[in-house]
Image 1 (cartoon, one colour):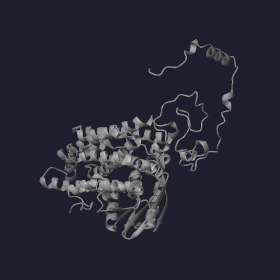
Image 2 (cartoon, each protein chain N blue to C red):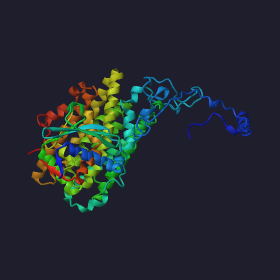
Image 3 (cartoon, each protein chain N blue to C red):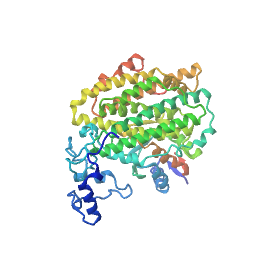
Image 4 (tube, chains in turn yellow, cyan):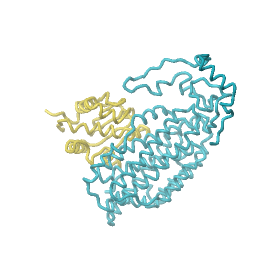
Length: 140
Length: 379
């Protein structure tokens, strides 16, 4: 039985990976941000402090998040399948590539400083999502 | 040498006698009672370690540092005992807190130190040969890397130029811009390595870029230089790094741009918070910053007619056929809109909203018929 996506269980599994792979995340440096991942209409909250993901949750007020990565389920699925096939995002499915022009995956934010945190911590956020390569997933 | 001591020590009887006295064990020990403050310092987080934020207490802290710190003008560290009359005056030119300070600057410094990376080993150079790239695309990429190398060399010089001019009371800012200098040196390194590793080598140095960079270096004040470099130029470069990651021909290049964009975004955040600090604390400087940005924007416009601009079109269209160039022009158009929109957002966040009405970029958008386009990919 795989981990369902989207689900809180999926984000908890990624959170655990930041602890299991502590050395890799520590090498990337401090990462202090609270951001959202919206899959269709479902919002998940991800909290990073220092080197690791310290909290994940469902729902919340998007205006309290630094930024929200928002895309339909099909796109998240495509991205995660690429991560699983390549052991990490391939050239077409990095977070920056998907969000850059804004019509594939959207970056929602109210505060441009919150928005800039996506880029200040890009390598950590990409590494966090790339950890899905080691998970057995089941898509909704 | 240009600074000579006032005393020839070995010919000075007082000095020689005192030196001999000390060697006989007749110590003064007056220094044991410096009269400085003793505070309890603990790391707020053991995992994070002891940061500058943890030292922000009493006479050692920065919160209570006034706009005009009447302290030493030499290298006495903030909180140390000092004798103004006897200490060297290093002649710092930036002596007002608002000359240099930014909200969160201590956090930016700690983040910078923690997120350093290595251009030699953190980019998987060995994988570059695994990917086939069309020749004209690789040449265009080398042109882009040449431009970035030029930019980053001056971005290294700029913080170094101003760092020693800052009063040492502002050591958090000095530390941050010193970290910026090494970030930018590493960027110049990584783009040089990429241009050469791809087999094309460096391409043309761009006069348009160099005049703009000279204007940054020659800014009359640090705050003008910061508004030009951190906010406008690095904001533009951050968007270009994102664009470059987006159109990168290989995963190796994507990794390189993910790493450089982190540093650039941190510099932009500092610039925005410095501008906000100035406007909150010394709003009378607003017109000076307007005037500086009038000319900064003028120089920035010059980038829209250069080999760089054409190289970006070739990269975005992935070739030089008419259809590819057409597609490239559309994609680069969206990049230009994004650069300007994000610049305007940062101005608003810093409390400099009235800059937008005066910005030359509004006229640019109207002139090249981009003002009604949304930043989305062409179909």
